[in-house]
Image 1 (cartoon, rainbow, N blue to C red):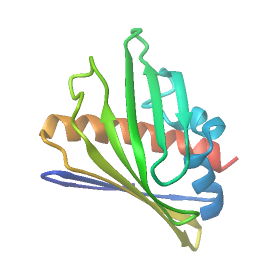
Image 2: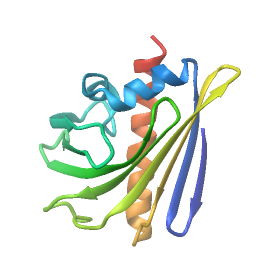
Image 3: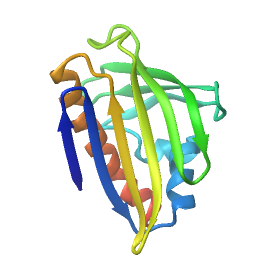
Length: 150
């Protein structure tokens, strides 16, 4: 894993032993997203809705081991199948970062061993927000291995 930290930007790169189409499908199919898109296996989903089209929205509810539910929602801004996704990412109340809109871009590049995935999240207003997202994405991307490399 390569992780880069800048003031308002988080960059994480991972390589998966799967085709870009397989990794992209894991990011865009609700059934597959349920398998990996959470901070750790201890979290569960209370909802996962995806309308995959430019201008379409998504909404994901996460339930922590302590029973706390956080919901994130956003809009798809760019969709290039098997190559790139860009979407807004905004937590809902009562999350401590509610209402702060960030931008997530995920790139899928063919690589000798499968797919090089690069995730960029930017427009953080606080360092603590960026650090929490680094932890969450790291957990999710670890779980993604099990989904795409079966």
